[in-house]
Length: 531
Image (tube, rainbow, N blue to C red; front, side, top):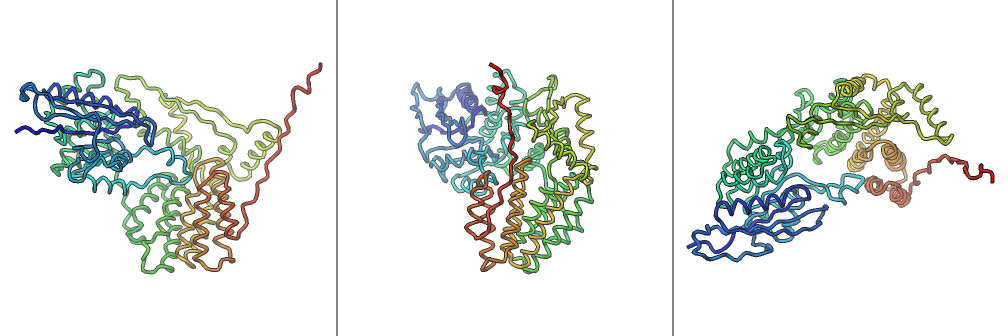
């Protein structure tokens, strides 16, 4: 007796990812294989512009065996009745599961692990990203079988679009009664970009089949992807003896980052600073009951702060080989294509002064302030550098090689002094009260961005340290910890700092001082005209 129900599949894709192409491929495969099928699309905005779902039904009996009968298909998916959901983005998968589309006893879920941030996530001044752990747990608990992997990375490494990888994943899962050759034949019939699409299809196919059979092929395929196969550096044995296992992974990452940024001596300074924090945390939490969270948070934000961005760092990042490879993959440039990349820079007086000794830097900045006070724009040097050219690459690598000047520059000295102020507050507060020390350590996230954003973050951090961490007016350290946490949250809530000022006043400390702004007088040109 033939199965009397179609196989149902919901495809979730964002704009530009080829969801429509994928549904057309599936219908073409079904028809070429002699099976009745139907697809519909449901456009919608959802979290990000252009999220669209495509619904496919395939009757699992060839037309030749139906005796002239035609199956009746549905135009829309029914909640809980889907055989499979395939999605190119994790939050979109969770949204469909939240709509009751997936049933734990029936639905196969194949989803990409990567995220495309929502508008709300991008608007947050702090880390507004949704935690992926609950999303993955949602997929696990609401599916009979699930496959989660980074489809975007597989597509980029293959030089194709996500839809080809999704097609391979569907084929590899065995959802439909089609042969692999049938799927590949439809791709080959498309003509343009066939080779790249077949590569993406093959990776998706073999990865899912490998997960199903728990074969070694999974690890081999993951190693093809630099992003997926990248392993965090291991902490050196001598350093592993210093730090507890709970923080070794983040310390290893920070140490490797600073070795690359400035060298082993600078990375050793990072280790020395963290040892002070660890010693303070052990005095307030000898048993490590909190997982050495103060040291871990300090290690995270200290590494980022010590590797601050300057023109040397930007030139280094722009001229790396893997950056060129990434651009080639993004534009899908072939071996016979001519690719030109232009980078635009506009360093100003502060950027150049940052590499000069303090005395010379002050002269440069004073000269620029006089320009502004005279009604002129702050000085900047617009540059357009062809990174694809030998001359452009030499210029960038030459600038990147100047990192030896960093320790001699004014900004380096300024940043190190501010870092020491923050660390001193972390150490002293942690010794007195563990929770308050953790809150001060997490205030390291206030230091971010560049220009005025970076300066504002430093001012906010110093104000919190001076008026909250070091204040003697709090009735208890528990209240102090709550005040620091509230101030940090408020500082990340808005650029103007109004929420921070209100929070500071609510906790009995002064709001931030108003910075003086120069008044610029501009002559009205109409007054100079004679009638």
